[in-house]
Length: 74
Image 1 (spheres, one colour):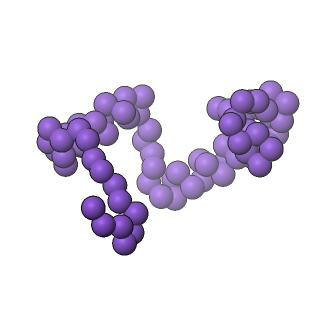
Image 2 (image 1 turned 180 degrees about the vertical axis):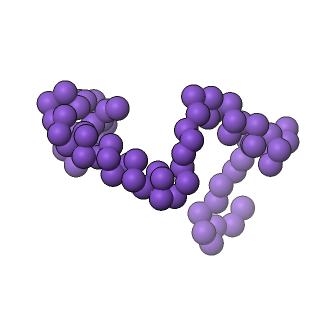
């Protein structure tokens, strides 16, 4: 786990986990509670591979997408 103060370090270049282990533990506990509440578990080490398999089903061979802002015209 890593811990950043994004209001002061928006690029997340300074990991504060070692300096604030109590805050990290608090946030890990909150994550765990919310993960169980919203059926996030189980987490898998191969999540990217699993998501890519879903994308293949959804998008087939299409690999490029163009997004437009709401109300924009081509």
